[in-house]
Length: 158
View 1: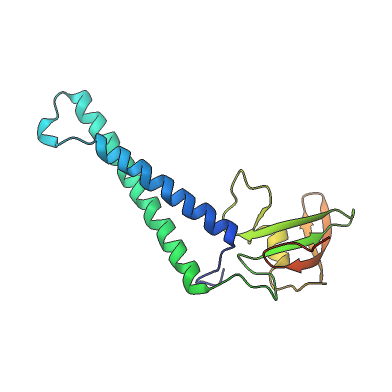
View 2: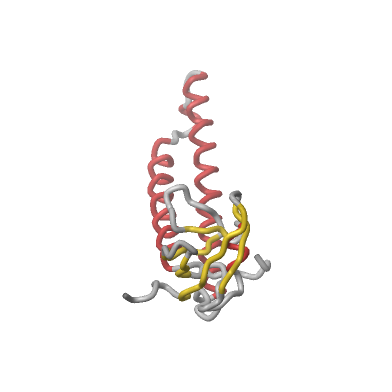
């Protein structure tokens, strides 16, 4: 990444906004369980309070991180559609003829099978390319290539 604010795709924005809402809900629940420290009784109660306070700190940090990332994305504007960049949705064709629409993102999510990080071999190779470009990249099984079919929020119609 360049150090400048990077755009994110609309799907990534929705995921971050949902995570932020979930974290805020969880924070409200945890905050409701915290007691006035003058009422804390035995050591087990004190340990429980410390654990909840640690959980609040963790939630607060993640809420701040997501809020800042969403702000940076607002400053950066929409993901590029003329060349592949962080936040782009890119449709590529592999040598076997298969076509996939991928998101170029910052952090791989275990549940997101279509997210390619910008620093992965394929992600690095795609950055800066345009529709129609043939892009070579290295895989654990050796060199490979893709053809960039389209860049934008949706793959090619068809």
